[in-house]
Image 1 (cartoon, rainbow, N blue to C red):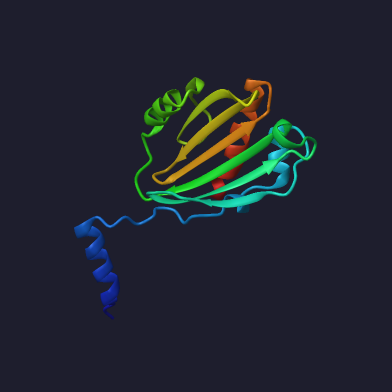
Image 2: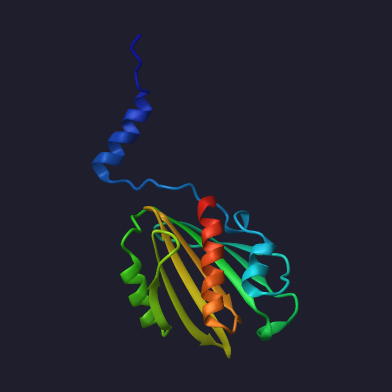
Length: 174
């Protein structure tokens, strides 16, 4: 018995092939849907309040942010953690050098590529409002970029290792 492809499927395939219409390589997931309060507490080293979920504009895909704040401090003294899950319509493989350059241009220090998590990853630090801030950007496959920003973790080595551990835990869920 011969099987025939549906005409609509053929039309969509032709449009994508002829005109390069982008098709997301990964289904977007809400960042708060892939992590827990316990995950945030492991990075910050103290209890956190309820997460805050936000969609983030993205010119070439979809992104969402999940933010946790320490429940032990208030205002500017509070530690915080944000995770952005970005699902790109363009190929993100090989973007680590550009990410490194952009972080350097934005005033980050100690910018470097790190191993042991994702397909490639970049770590950077800076001080913001008197608090240490670490940013780990991890690339996975053709379309997933995970950015973990920890504010207020005083020991950089600890912040990096905790951020890498969180990324390793979250990546399979993306």
